[in-house]
Amino acid sequence: MFRLFKLLVFLLVVGGIGLVGYAYVGPFFGADFSAPQDEVRVPVTLDAD
Image (tube, rainbow, N blue to C red; front, side, top):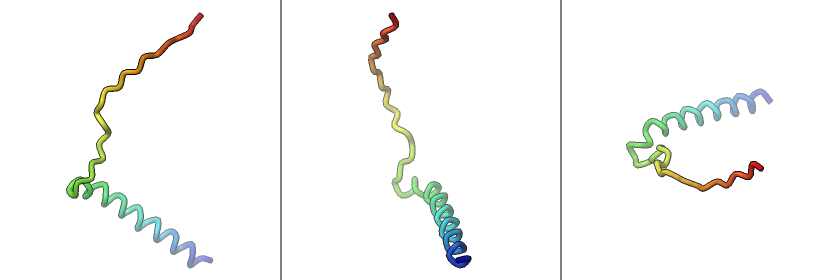
């Protein structure tokens, strides 16, 4: 049981390191993480009677 727990912790740590590495290296390979910069205007009707 302890070996399974160690394996899961190891996979979580390796996955976290991989995710952080992808966040830093991804833009060099064409991955765009920026939010869209479009202005959105939606009319709102307020019924405050």
